[in-house]
Amino acid sequence: HPLGTGKDPVVFVPLHDDTPLKVIRFQFVTITIIAGNILIFLMTGVFQSETMLAGVATSFGVVPSDLTTAFSQNIPYSPIPEPLTFLTYMFLHAGWLHLISNMLFLWVFADNIEDAFGYFAFVLFYLLCGIAGALAHVLMSPASTAPLIGASAAVSGVIGAYMLLYPRARVWILLFFRIPLRISAIWVLGGWFLLQIFSVLTTDQSAEVEVAWWAHIGGFVAGLAITFLLRSRLLVRTSR
Image (cartoon, rainbow, N blue to C red):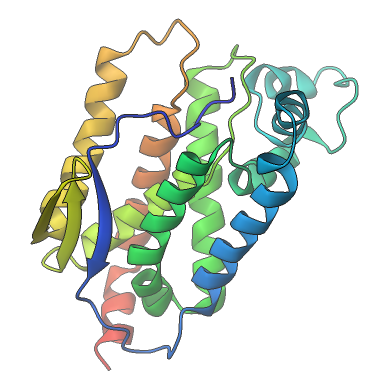
């Protein structure tokens, strides 16, 4: 099974936040990323067989064992150079739950990060967080043969940036799919990150798992670090 299939325990889903856009008029990049992910999923996932989906995931997802040997030998039947999978993997999803959960987080939180960074810088930020998450996963599981796919690491970077820039923002969430709550971003997103840490500490890392916890953590930390380094500029930009 591909890693990052959306089978991680879903404690809450975000519904809406109260942070308005201050610089850009519309979140064009966020919408484009969401539309692109949905289109690619429809082309590679929902209408294809399990065998074909596995082939797409293996060819365009990040396979740690292939990457660790790519510099010493050629990987047979690889349609693209292995390092390029650090980009392609984040636009593939293995199922509806995997896709919807990632896109919902993007819809709620990414518009404000796009507003703070600007269009071009946000694209770069998003891709860097996705790459950082994949690198973290490869470093922690270098011998894994399961392909890593999904936007989770890049989305985790967006979550980290939002928590740092808008910690007091009020976010409507649906807890356990049933209980609507309005809570500060610092609590809900900080709690999400602690859940990733807890999951890493309580999961047998020697066995193949279906959730790439280290990719989530790597993306989150990257988003937090990049935003921290640029925080003063971003706050000036959004306070004009």
